[in-house]
Image 1: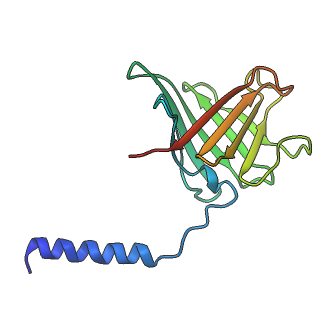
Image 2: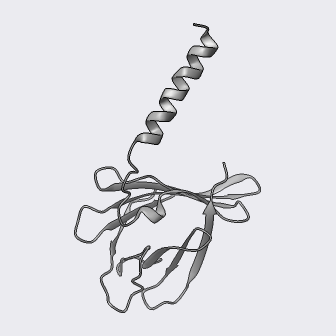
Length: 155
């Protein structure tokens, strides 16, 4: 068998195996999984599928084609209330806990994390949108709001 024919056969078998495997359950935060990019290409956020109750993420901001800021994050869904752990610019990790406040935004494909002891932000909300993924950050009282919107990465 020629090397090209052998490679084509192997690819066909691999694709058939992937197509026949059951779709993986990504859990209640599955709406966040993937690569997300702002319309201007400046902000990028990536979230892994959950493994053993942990999702890993990172975010970058570029200016003039160079990295301006970055953040490494993880979400631990193993506790009864998920924990969002963020480490901006490699700083000490900050833990935000999923809110159960009935006044907080609670909807399908939405999650809110809070940390009243942190200077800013104190509240982080992620939600699925018609166009992709959005996040809002603010103080607990709603002051100093900032919003982010992303669509799925094209490449």
